[in-house]
Image (tube, rainbow, N blue to C red):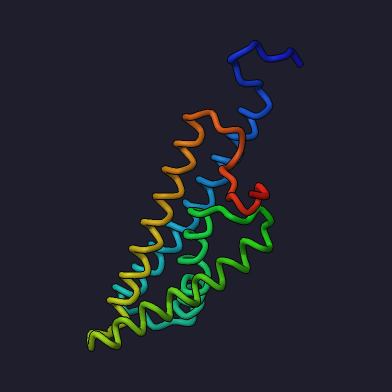
Length: 149
């Protein structure tokens, strides 16, 4: 491998950054597909065991996963999954309690709010990753706690 010239990035970090961005896009595409499936099942009012499985998968993973991707404070996959579960449960609870206090609770409205939050956080994570790639950041942006500050 040839050394990089001054002022030029080496090709290895660029490849790692491209692979990380591709992996992020795949994860966010999976989140968008899960949101779309959940929205379609809620809108169609289809009663099936598949609806229950997709609803539980969406409620337990999608909102927290998108926020975990947005803030990217964990690097281990298992830690990210645990953070996504905890964030999802807390967001689901906050949305449900807020709608109950407002005397406006409905499953359709709660699903729409959670889908909107999930897609917004996913778009923010993608924009953040593209900005880091455009600025030539070597890898993902690290949280100050991980850097030891």
